[in-house]
Length: 41
Image (tube, rainbow, N blue to C red):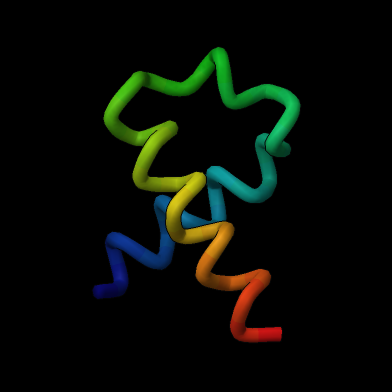
């Protein structure tokens, strides 16, 4: 979970507009995590 959280934080730091620079699988995973995060707020 710590690794996953770290990857998530890195994704957010890189910014959603830079998602094209992130590998395909991680982009999808990060986007899903981000959407869950927004829904939980």
